[in-house]
Length: 127
Image (cartoon, rainbow, N blue to C red):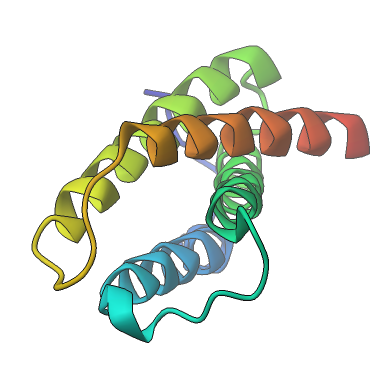
């Protein structure tokens, strides 16, 4: 895992990671909504929402890593970002197995992975 630089203040670490952790909590909360309470707005919305949600999540995690480990290469950081985001996607699908009207899906994990790749690419493109 990338090593946090010695000269980074605890406040900067907290400020950098708070949005990513907050977004992870939001994803967990949304996954806790029973299936019958999920409104269907348009076809394939689930796929689109998974891609967008994990693209944003990936960008927030990448931002946090870059703030705490500025000397580490983007490729190395993105390896860890992908690992963390993908692991969270798997745990989120496992969590849904216990929510009424929801079920785990490898298709959702694939959509999440596409979002992770898009988020990492977009973050790199912005910088």
